[in-house]
Image 1 (cartoon, rainbow, N blue to C red):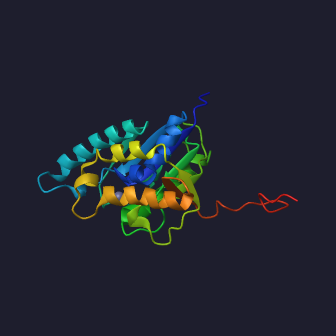
Image 2 (spheres, protein in one colour; image 1 turned 135 degrees about the vertical axis):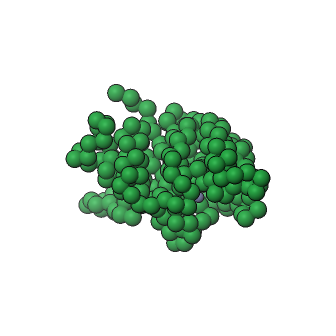
Image 3 (cartoon, rainbow, N blue to C red; image 1 turned 180 degrees about the vertical axis):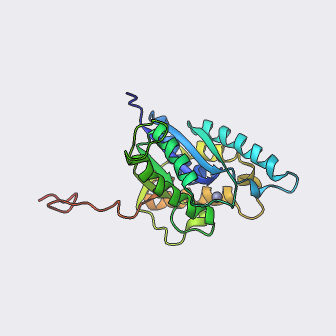
Length: 237
Ligand SMILES: [Zn+2]
């Protein structure tokens, strides 16, 4: 039995998972966890003018492997099209198969509300796949069922009602995180959003609130933060 712990970060487009939780993932990778960035699409329609959508898809997947390697993990990109995601049994089953194979102890994905439909669908797919991964009644290539808890993390496109529940100190990981991010063309060169500046500032701001130099945040999935017992947790009587 493999005792290595596993973290899977699921994003709608190559780059989302890493900007949202790359520093946290790097921290867990350094501690011996197996880290996987799972991208539902390459995010290829943000292509620069000098490159076709198909060419940019190839480039983004290549970049995702470089970034994942620097963060101590690996990258998987599914073959769905950017800005055309749908909540289908096909993609839920595909994600569930990856989850049964990767057997994550923890999953991180987008928040529920977003200005990008792919992001909202991504977290719905992760939620639906949680059930399909866990239920013994679903036969998936002979892979044994597996249950995973998941958290949401922070993305500039998903900020409506995103209030963090958890701050993680990533002071020791932040330099590597920024270096890794810089390997994505869009993070350094997008003319529609200042990705690098935003995530550098976000990690700094979250760090201020966490009383550490840098931090990244998580939000509990709905219903996950319910604790039942004889007293208030942390206030035993
Ligand atoms: Zn995205």
